[in-house]
Length: 459
Image (cartoon, rainbow, N blue to C red; front, side, top):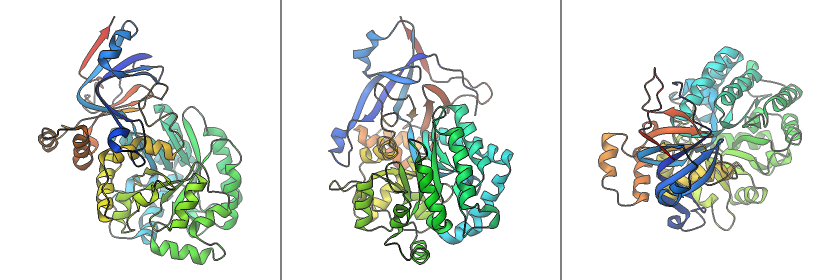
């Protein structure tokens, strides 16, 4: 990634902007979507301090505030990925298996390489670079069983100042010997990582049992104890992804009434608990998730790639008992780190279940909805005064086909739909983290020029 010049402590962005004033699954999507055709966003010390129509705000700017104008772009809150495995980046697009066989054949051998701290650091750098190229500024990330994989990830994230959630995977059974820890060893290593990284700058820690099949009850109980050690910790794991997996869990935990009950019994189901997939869940599970305040991560590209099934998004978000839901790319079972590509598949999955995913609902899932799922919606996910200035600039003319299609769009909803159906990382013109430009698609690799187009100063 080219080295981009630091932005001044106070600067502003101008351009078309979208954000959300309400949840479009619970309110009229047209009302929930906030569209400002010519917006001004004032950023000071990494936070948004003003947002509104350019004509209404430009005379109120402090003297000598630089303004970067993104012509023909759409400024959005940065995307939020609620479920992704950074160590699996090297094995993305691995052929031919369903979940359990895929873990054995591809995932575990790949993750074993993260015993090498230098290797882990290299993958962490590539992974975070790819996230930013895709416009994703926050994510809930799985590392490996190796503590050095966590250190590598958080070291790079801290360097970039991205708001990330991550944790060491816990596995003490049903995995290769070189990827297993012990209940006490996993607890001790996780606690040391929590002390080192949780709430260190913008870094947040997630207690991370991989899934119920790879942890004994003793390890799950100790994971529950870890959650009580510090305020604001997260928990992430997998739930009901694949029918063979669900059947296996019922045999491994015969005393539990459901897959979710395995985690609930260990004290792992509550606010800031993020459960990946949730494809094969019943109404009781949705009710429990709603009551407990935990979240489900919808991973459509992964579920389609592995043949796991179709997540019932609209059932999960039923207004009578809505469950927190975010989007997950789930690389490497997922096939892209792009949330635009993920929305493409989410739309098709919804269609296959007889529902239509409105563009406003889709972009809410990728931004404000993901932040809500992670209990970070007071900091990220929308454009508003007081929020952290994590933003991306989308280009609906990124390819000739997109440009041709965009010319036919009459509404902002039409334009967003084109982005989610035809867009990918090429459609992300720029990405800002805490107000700093960290990705500029058109910047020369060598020079790292800002390349934002028209920059002016108001005096």
